[in-house]
Image (cartoon, rainbow, N blue to C red; front, side):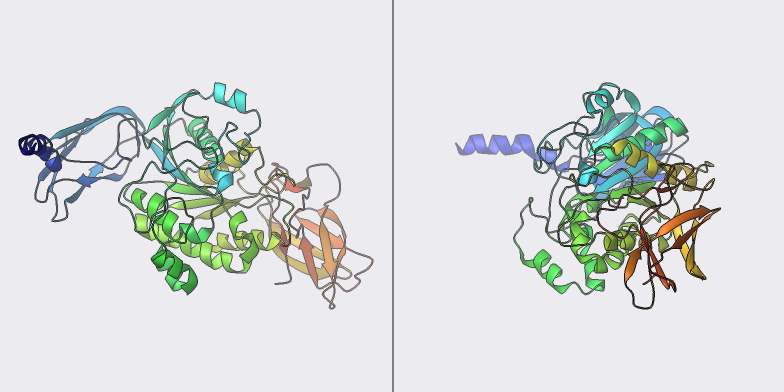
Length: 474
């Protein structure tokens, strides 16, 4: 028995010295084009490592550190491929079918995680799911799904994770987009990637790192919560036992975002907020801090575009305050918000039109990151000026002009006077302004628009992008 054990150990011991890569580095991946990307992994301390790409002929060399980790910077070229990447140490790893293009991360809670096909009572499928799946032949779009995994400590590699809400355990491999690989992928992230791929005609890599029912605290590094004085949340994060299923503060960042931080990305698209709607007064600071710490972890001031939560019949809270916090977060550089006031479902917190969600997120990227001359935002409140018995509301991002999606006067406006009691008001469009009046408020001091959880207003710009809810009475 002892001899057999010795023989077995002899057989497996050479594997300890093998060069190993994180799951995110694999055949079929997309690397960010025209930049320097990091190739990293693990080996024996002191082991000599070389990395070479077929596109350049350059050899990058390094030595594994005392903890076995190593990394090199490799320059990439213009969009296209396929390329190969060879990593050599005591063993050799050859990665093939690598494309250069645009790389984005899709993260957040259920409205980002929601797959194309119906998988559970929570995720009942997007609109036209069968047709979208059948037509998902895009070999130039590559998909990577990080597993749902809550970790007490920051991880260096993603895990396959757990099955939750009907989403299968992640394979944690790059896959070409096809009818076979797309059904359980994050639909909003896919439609964002598809729009970029079609408009830019370059490969797109999209990393799905989303988990339903999760608050922003779970996606924020411990340092961010410390800066905000979140003592109770930090106590949970530090003291509760490890459980990959629990959505504990900081632990989704640890398990699903921290392992991605060395991978060069263009930006992040995010859909979350429902899990924080009951404490909206804290969300702007929390969300801003989360974004800043992600950028710090990635060592990149990447773009961060997010979806404003849709109208829904919440119980006991006014989700308009959460939308307001999301609106305020656009004060952070290189951020943008896709408004969905017109495509929600008052009885389903998971609206099915994820095609338009992805397209609206992509408009921000096309305009801000890729220089396309497109209208990328709906009207955003700028100021309100009293004009006699009316308020004249001014907007930015009016595009080709203000309009309504039903050819009726603008709806869901309210006015208040010094008594701070709001009354229903009528509104009309005057160029790039909306004039608001109410017979019950002759001396208006404040105006609100769609400032309830379930408002579905009609104000848009002529390009069809809806206005965000707002209030002037901060």
